[in-house]
Image (cartoon, rainbow, N blue to C red; front, side, top):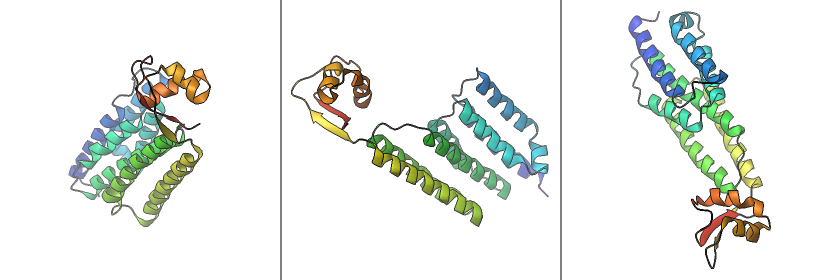
Length: 223
């Protein structure tokens, strides 16, 4: 039997989780409207979902729809940061906290799998970022997961690391140059690649505001 005070704790944790999950996602458009509908339906039937043992499935549906509607890696980091601060008293509350943290990681893995990286350094930065997430998960949820669930989480983390490692190996390196004088983005693109059409990636890679005046010290893809 689940006592009323346990349910209050669980629903409060999930409500804060879902608020964080929706921050920054546009309310307009079909996917945004659908997210609000899915979340609203979940919150309206929480007690029934607990009684039917489907609350986990329906909560995951909220996370899935959030990703479709435009949730980013930062959005899902924010959800996890909210959950890290939770200090539930009851096992059900701890389970809700753990579940939300795992779901946020699952959605991040799906986002990363669909990303296109342009350089090894970009893939390396992502690997460093997600390694920190994996460590947080191991610290926060490992003791609460049963053997099979923990193995699944470990396999997912390993698959993500493998994906980023393989992706990194296939990408060109970042090379740093010190030019004799300042150049425009167009002239640098022609000089480095023999192709004036790649000036946009030089601007992005170096964070230059004015493409007419590049700094002498720049970085560019090796190919």
